[in-house]
Image (cartoon, rainbow, N blue to C red):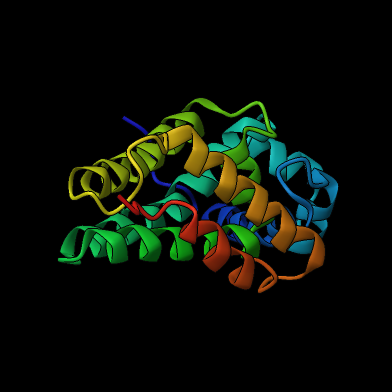
Length: 184
């Protein structure tokens, strides 16, 4: 059984997590740990006392942020129209990925993921697969459109958003989604 953290240690941990969220959002998962410590107002030693490796920091930070994908999946499941469920899920996911470079890297595998992060990403991808299966079964999307096709499209559009601005993916998404419509 672990003892609760002292008040100052708990405060430092909270400051580190908030600082890491900001740094990783801006710089990605390879963001400077020294910058995290500086923004948190603690020494690098304090950071390493709380999080001995970058992956332990990522494991503490990202899975709760990945929980937003659970919310997107719940919205998609509640949507009676399978096409709208699919397009809504894709739009929500892209919006989140282009705001948060760390989350984008987690989903695209640009970081050798920590164990909890890898599990959370697999969970998120299973949500996408569920949405796509429902849309396929309803005949809303082309039967030859694979999950990997959609993942590749979302990844490419998220990179567009990363390089040209947060909303740059919105118009191309409409054109790309049109290619998934089942016209048979």
